[in-house]
Image (cartoon, rainbow, N blue to C red):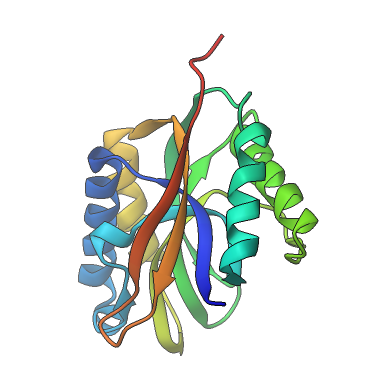
Length: 195
């Protein structure tokens, strides 16, 4: 029996990807010591709803089947690109995120549904509050990032007011390689039009 490293995510439209690439470029120009870190490639940018870990194929198939009815009543909802953020918030930083505004908690609710179904299949629940975000870069070792570097990226984001309609969620498998992860789409759930 085989297993796959997998997760459920929101894939991003080209307009959002382009905005994220501009924000990343702004940070690299303002903080040159971050240039050589592990920036996520544009075709791998996504919002993770639930990281499942390495899951046996039979569990993954059952999870996929149960997510269908659980997501059947999810309606299309908006997300707006909000800002860049370095985490953790104090001292040296490990990652830079781009976060999305979720004023009605529709994305958080979606993540909660996925988390609930995954828990029924023995996958550990998430304990931290869900924040819709895209990881732009992972530092090879923790380092400082100036407020000015983030401000330049946030000015880029605010100048364009980029938003998207979330119309689906995707189950992806991830194969780790020296050049970075390779993602394979296993299933896609399409949401219903807004009522």
